[in-house]
Image (cartoon, rainbow, N blue to C red; front, side, top):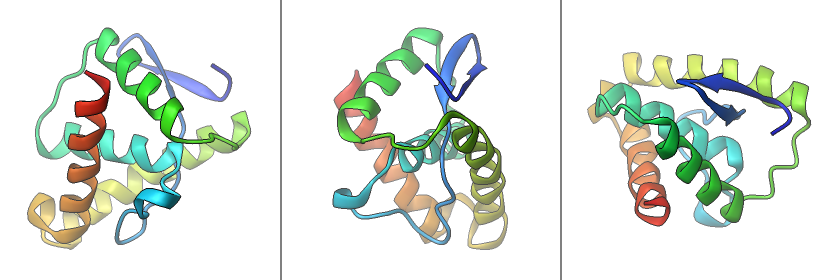
Length: 114
């Protein structure tokens, strides 16, 4: 998959900044879903196997257009990871509203993927 990197042995696509919340279901991007996965790993201490990442990424591909180019995906992923960490650190941690929204997106994605 172009514009991706390897995480735990699986290719993972990039993501965009989520800011203080998550996009609505109609505007969810590939990047928003990847941010939700990072939030679950951080807050729920989730550990994903390579097979899990493949299933999650397949579900994301069905739900989003993924129109970003390879370079933009990688740059956006780095920034989004920092933004998720920052949201967890300043807005109520994992119990804060921004992280709760990301975690609910993850729960729905996991249900669709697994």
